[in-house]
Amino acid sequence: MKKLLLTLSLSLALPGLALAQLPPPREGAQTTPDDLPPPRTTTRTPRTAQPAAAPQASTADDLPLPVSRSRRPVTRGFQPTLKFGVDDLLLEAGALPDAPEADSYSTLRASAYVLWQPSRNWEFRAGARLDGMAQAGGSMDHDEMLADYGDTYVRYREGNTRLTFGAQTIIWGRVDEVPLADRVSRVDLTRFSLDDLADRRRAQLAARWEQTMGDYKLDAVWLPLFRGAQLPDVASVWSPINRSTGQIIGIDPALTGWVSGARIEEDEQGSGGGAIRLTKTGAPFDFGLTLARTRQSLPYYQVDLPTLSLTAVHPYNTFVGADMELVSGGLTWRMEVGYTDDVPVTLATTTAMDKTQSLDWIGALEFFPGGGDTRVNLQLVAHALQSDRSILELKEYYGANGEIETTFGQGRWKAAMRFATGFNVRDVYLGPKLSYVGWEPHELYIAGHYFDGENRTLGGFHQDHSLITLGLRTKF
Image 1 (cartoon, rainbow, N blue to C red):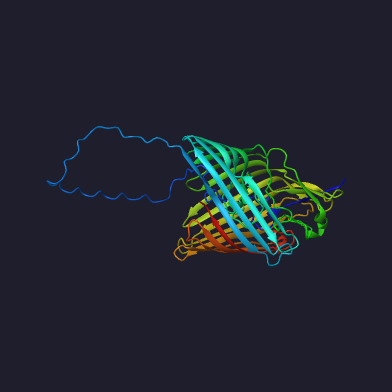
Image 2 (image 1 turned 30 degrees about the horizontal axis):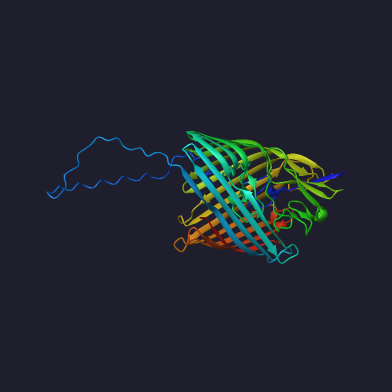
């Protein structure tokens, strides 16, 4: 039985999106309540103490001063806390002007949590989420509802040590969108790249040890039970397998016409591996080192031609990476570099699977021209597979991505543009967005997502799936 192995190589295309080999926010910008506070010395100028007002002269009408008593100050003890709420609610309706599969695409997403802290050392959290989608008006009308757990864990703190066991969302890395050090997160592809990076990640079972040592932090993660990326239904317009056109994302469509009727399965058996990360904050610059041996979250499709079946497998990768961040003169410079071994590829001559190595580099610059109302984040990316054999994937990809964001109308309105483009191949993504944020904590917005590009790129695969959306996002 001859097996053809084809790869979902998302790192070959839009570098602004979630990639398999260029997996994705910088730690400082994406720190969540699940992360220890960074041991960074504050750069804020301390406030000058205001001089105390001179005491006024006492008069005969003044009450006599109270008798001074020696009393110990009362120390207020820890109070157990119980919190609950909805930390994310998204309602969105969209139109697909060019898609043959559907004319409309709508989304419902809600995440709720309960947090109990009975003492200073212990914390218990339970989270749940609900995702719904509906597409209609074309050849592949479809709707579904998916229930999943959110961050659900037990956490213990003692001094500079923190231990967490349970389902967690952990995102390593320093740059936005495609941090190379992001090796222990679970990818969410149900909405492809429509959301920011943090919303494209889900919780998965992990044991985590965080240790702060002055300016240094050690972060170790073990994934005892692996869960692959949350993929959209094969009928969804965001599926990495397009049954209507017979394409697999990242592969030349001339070679994949047989997938239209293929049976799709997934193999997620075993553990997910482990990783360790060491970071330092403070002068002269922040830096991090990452070593990981983990299974890639995005699937590699193994095809059995005689039975016309596709099996999504998740091979192990070995990753070694370094990153740094420097703030100087109002400019923030970031960089990540990484080496990945055991990267699966497909040989063009024999259609057999092979493994090779990849070298990846990302450089980023963030600044605020004209003050704090506008933010500009620019990133350059480079990806190269170290193989001298003929393969189906792109051997090299060079491109840029980023975001420009500004506020106006006394901070009640926000306009933004996310973008990505390839240099050595035609690969385009544009994501304009206009939001009204004056009705806190609610955000009303209208947004667009435009895709275009060559074969084997993300923009080319989704060039008929450009989308216009109207949405509401809130929490309470």
